[in-house]
Image (cartoon, rainbow, N blue to C red):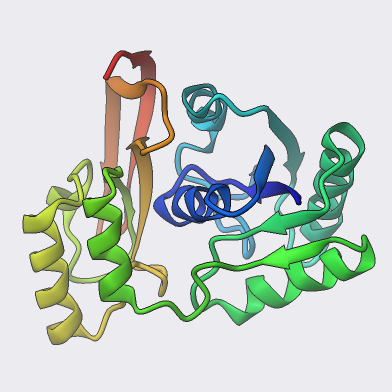
Length: 226
């Protein structure tokens, strides 16, 4: 089956893509670029680098823009999936949804309308086992957004390695946050994955942070040999 992967550049969509590759053919990545940083549906931090990640993965990218307005942004998602089907003959769509019923239900509805199969390999996954496998498999993931206490500015740019995962466990126990950031506590960006031919090197970045709310914007990045 030929699949398109809903792609944000964060760890969940990259991991879902990797899992899909183990069973089916991933024909393209699909990114919806929201002009609204508060989009209900779409990841926004560093979405402008989706094309660089697609190049690292050696996969074509279908990219559409949306104003990011609640519910109407779904029309742009439907347009993106239709374009992917038209260009790459996809028969199904892969998402990185873990717990968000809001997002999963809407993607599934659009897939039904377009007669596309919807595959959610992370849905209700054991979050600790997932984070362990992410590291073991060779994914290199950095935190590029924080949106709740106790995540301060020191988390921005931090790589999710064993030490960071231990700290996330402590935070989750004390503050009842999710281990994966699925509750909106933090956002990520993948700089390397098992299926990347080259890794991403961040050359210039700037951080904006205030009151447990911050973004690391990657201003300049390139591909380098592993």
